[in-house]
Figure 1: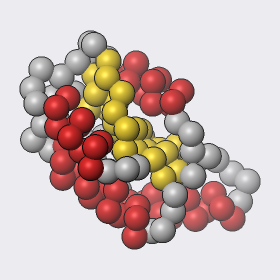
Figure 2: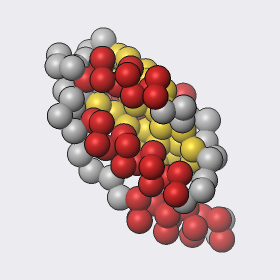
Figure 3: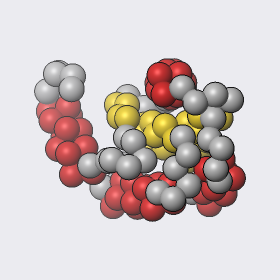
Figure 4: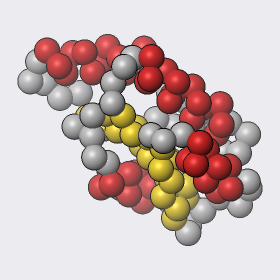
Length: 113
């Protein structure tokens, strides 16, 4: 299984597009996955939007941190991940084509990326 860790801080303007792009793209690749959105200290509509998306997207879960802390968001996501392969995508930058190539390479070698 693949885990996507996506930290989010004040990302209300980008969040829904990013989450839907990533989940729709991974479904097309026909791989089991989970998307862990780590909301960390947002002061905009990010927490409510994240919760709404998680209710609509079965592969997604939200973890909320009280303070803005990118490192702690990464740590939380990595420790929560259930996938054999874990990838970090930012809300404003993700590359599903690269991910497909990297996962394919991992499946055919013992190397880690």
